[in-house]
Length: 125
Image (cartoon, rainbow, N blue to C red; front, side):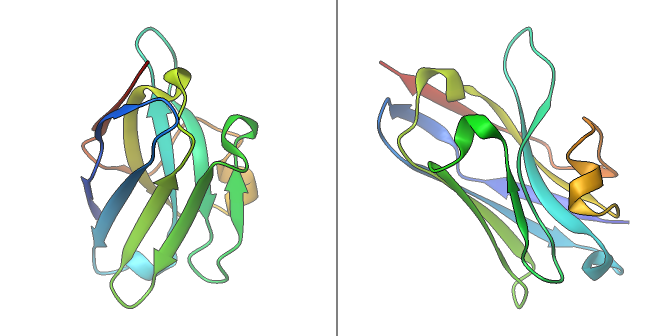
């Protein structure tokens, strides 16, 4: 079992920055890769970024490339999402996620083995 607890999020003006953090715990946590998904009102939940826990390899959705950065701290069992140059269309509930699949396979789906509770990110004009 893996538990994920998110922090960060909130209200920010367009062009601003926010940092999301996710603390992970669980007996076999090191076997999972980590990622962030988001869901806007009326839309499906889609992957934003993912990172391989073992080698740090990353994946980014095209819509966030060059603006968002995912990172992990293996000593603290945390994963972060630094979001810069935020746009109105980044407004969504952001979910921390953990899954046992390889990142390149996992990001083709909209599913995950474990989810955090979600945190709201609202970008205003």
